[in-house]
Length: 476
Ligand code: BES
Ligand code: ZN
Ligand code: ZN
Image (tube, rainbow, N blue to C red):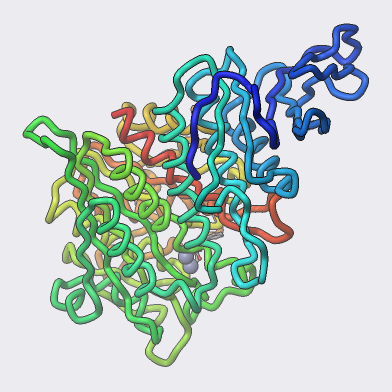
């Protein structure tokens, strides 16, 4: 989607989007715009309402914002107009930006409009959204210059659209190889380096915990390593490490899932968030060095699958007793974290994963679970999330939980065997592989990566984390 700025509506014909802050249900003063008078009886800017008026060769869509509106609601409002009023959006569309709109509000509005082009019917014969036509240009009517903000908003939505695709496409399409190909192509396009270790290279490197998970699958595991170097990087340039869980499908392995397996194509959503963040960070040319690792594998059922009670050997040299093959995410993340720390030594580390049902049990679909021993990082992550409606809430990493991962036969075990505090013991397991790094955070996004909303009948991707990780890095 391209955009241009206009000063007035003279000579304009097409669709005009007019955001309106709430007035008053019984207001005697009508809303006046472009020679149109809208009485409060039919529309007064109430949140989640809109009103269409056809006049002067133009379709006017008045869009209610309520008295005050947060970033996420604003984005959803415009995603809704773009997705559900598609038939009213012809080849020429103008967006009116209210004078009081902040930079953030402009960003949310434009991002929302582009996100509204997302269509879950990947395998259906459907018409292209008008905004996706090559020659489509959105005219922005504003007194202020929002060109930079507009471009940023489009980049954010573009990265999020990529990730919606990756997560919603089925696991017979999105295999580990598909993800490493995506990373290679995107790296070339946006300017970050990509190296992938397949089965043989991972074996040679000693990524034993990672490889044990993919053993039962026909699809070769791929350990994807990405590096983004900003221009003019120097000794003072900050260095962030990201690790994302890239399980393309989680059957549970031999501890096969008895509930919810149908949703488990979402188990690479943490990895996808890291991929999306890499695209966005390089697209925005952020002045921070970023190393990102996404171990990609499929957790399948087969005679070659790893077994409950197996003892495996991780990259860091720690032995792990497998209590449950469904606790596979922490195994691939353990090797991801160890590889990152040993080979790249980043100053800050964030891992992100659809790790536990326990995180869903604790927070439902409202926020991700955050674990860290670094208060400054905790604050930065929470502030970044609050600003864009991708919320986080912190849970403890107390050492009293350490006994949950103590094994008799090996250095650690992958599951406590207890039906409680599952998100915390998973985080303690990961912590064991962080070499006491002083600035590590773990985000369990099992409840927020894949959900129900007004845009589809079934659960689908949310792209949670793409913007959050990018904003966190931007705010460092
Ligand atoms: N992929 C799941 C976690 C999950 C649950 C993701 C719900 C998205 C939605 C993870 O690999 C898993 O199976 N976790 C188990 C661990 C248990 C066996 C120790 C869980 O949380 O039940
Ligand atoms: Zn699992
Ligand atoms: Zn999983």
